[in-house]
Image (cartoon, rainbow, N blue to C red; front, side, top):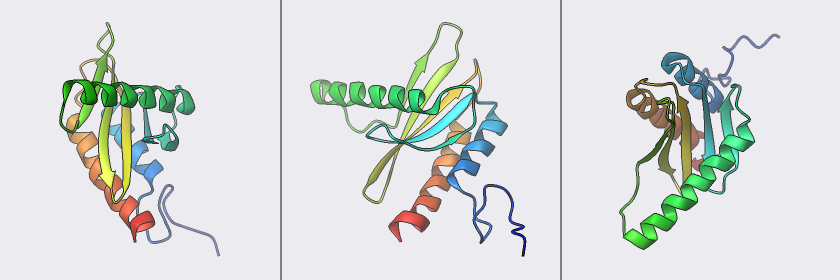
Length: 136
């Protein structure tokens, strides 16, 4: 029997992490997105012209820099870090905790593109999928 589920969905029709990222990229016209562990390991990504492992390493570097800043300055938890290029293209790193796991959703957004609503929705969906698969 042929599997007729939509691409990027589980057998129950639930979205996968890759599908969540792909749909977010499509709707927001994002150049790339990757879900990364705090160790810098890519867990999921949407296809893009950017190398996933390089992007994950960049995100880990940003995370380490933020951690050092938190320790030296005494900042509370950080929700988001955004690095803006001269042409206004930006690298956005959104942090989330699911169970015992700390994850980072990273997006490369084109100049002047809104992203917060889409990344908020993606974070909620990622948490739901992660809990179902890994925390249950």
